[in-house]
Image 1 (cartoon, rainbow, N blue to C red):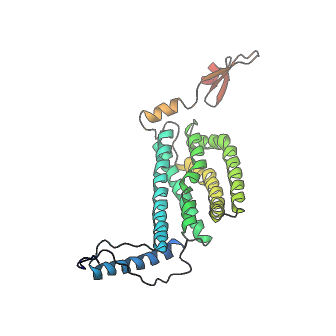
Image 2 (image 1 turned 90 degrees about the horizontal axis):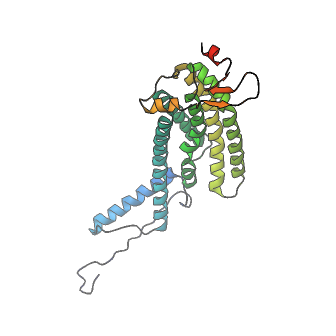
Length: 276
């Protein structure tokens, strides 16, 4: 109260809050329950005191509010990352069919990664929220390589799929081995957030690789575009024309120089016959 005791300057209101365990770093589902209970008490205090400028000062409240904000941010970030990844595939391939198939497979990989958290008994706490932030970025890695390789091949959709697997399959397999090995090292760390990240990546990376070389390629060979189909006007034509540059490699033989056009090597002697 002020000196005249006709105006309230500040009011402290305390109440006993009982939550599960310590309340520090609890999963989001538990934090949300406690948070709503504390907000109800604060609203009741405002109503009884007629003071609208009331706010929480409890450290536990502020910490739980941070977990709540991190959870919302992580979910929003995954959604935004997914949209950006699909747009990147669309722009870099210039083919709406390739982008549409890739988007469906990418969504299945991210969904499977979240399912892994449930299977392993994890709840959305602070560490889990930090781990899923990389879900879309890590899931799109091998898928983007396979989509890009498929888009640069020529022939029917079956031929383009076989060529993409032959060209990029060993590379994405090597990437899967190295990233999974690094994830195993993270699992052995003493920092809880790093070990959680390692477990999450060990679940995400192998499935991302398997989906990219099986599910994605199966869809490409079944409903994917043939050479020249599904291209976006201007953009798709530009990318398709510049996918394979025509180069001449000198070779000291009677057959003459080797002309590399796309995936076909022709010599100066037989290139006319092959083109016929």
